[in-house]
Image 1 (cartoon, one colour):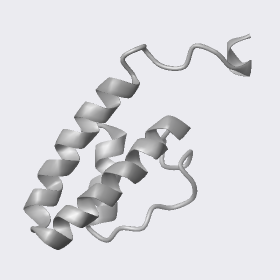
Image 2 (tube, rainbow, N blue to C red; image 1 turned 30 degrees about the vertical axis):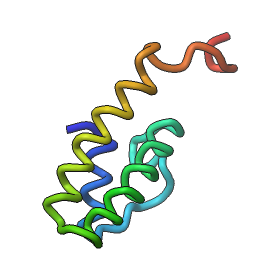
Image 3 (tube, rainbow, N blue to C red; image 1 turned 60 degrees about the horizontal axis):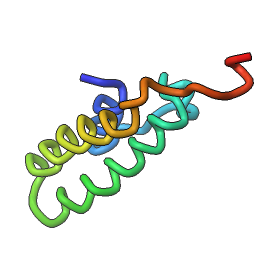
Image 4 (cartoon, rainbow, N blue to C red; image 1 turned 60 degrees about the vertical axis):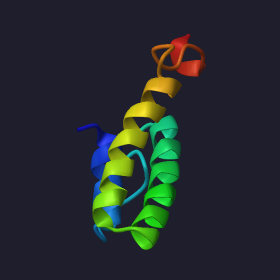
Length: 81
């Protein structure tokens, strides 16, 4: 399971992440994905059940990470110089 998937499930199960996204071992891009996934999964959990939220989480994490990382990750920035 990816770090995004791990933290999404932890948050949905009532866990409280410590620190910021970096202390969670996530990049800024991964944290954006996490927030989107958790928001959608909370709706699914409220409207359906925890199982539906878990299934949505798995699907959305795989799909969104694949879409946003299809270029292989960051290619520009001060750390690349």
